[in-house]
Amino acid sequence: MAPAMTPDQPTTVLNSPAFRREALRSDQRRIVLTIAVVSALVTFSVLRDLVMGDVPDLPLVALTLAIGAVLLLFESASLILVRRALARDESPPGWLLPTGVVVEALVPTVGVLDLTTDAVAGPYRALLFPVILLYPIFIALSTLRLRPALCWLSGMVSAVGYLGATALTVALFPDVGAPVRLPGLIYVTVAVAILATAWVAAAIADQLRQRITLLVEAADARRRVENRARDTLIFALAKLAEHRDTDTGAHLARISAYSAALASRLAEAHEEIDTDWIDRIRVASSLHD
Image (cartoon, rainbow, N blue to C red; front, side):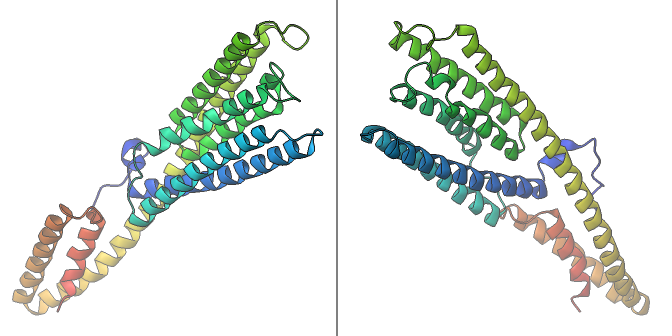
């Protein structure tokens, strides 16, 4: 029987199949929420551009639809990969999580640059337009990845993207002055606020991670108790047979050992075979007669 999992063994729990499944389910919810948020924002932006003004800015509408379509395709592909990993009980591709963080964190920056040429927003106003609220929204969604480091990555990419959009605006529109152009410290403050949001998100992700770890440990302890009760019953029946016939008892012990050895060799070629499966085979083989 495997030793009990304790709180001072976080690495073992975090790398367990049970925690991986919970993390994948959490990421699946995040992707669904992201798709809903992006769909709503694209719909709102297109309707706004079509309704406001006498002549709709068709190039801007086309650009908004193109950006939305690319992001929705990426999120849909991510959802397929996560669901496949769940169905196969395996980890998703290693590039998926960090790539998703970077792509989503750059969406608000693209929105800001998009609005820089907008008739309503224009340069500098776009840097403080409601579109910048997308930064904390995507950072908040990153908490469902259950990895604090990815929250920090989201915040860093978002802050660098915002400052990059600010620098590009200054380079392209140097002649625009007050009151449209505000002191540079205002834009730096926005970037600092984005980083502060990432700090809070990382703390929340860490708390979620610890809570799920405790739940996985509790479920593992409950499973061990159930397995112990099952094993006790099976071994009691086997011992009963041994008491009546010592040859039969020795035969059952040999079959259990052979079955466990064969299952262990199979595990080398089949990732889905774990120690629990091998233990179940070892115990159940005692009742083959």
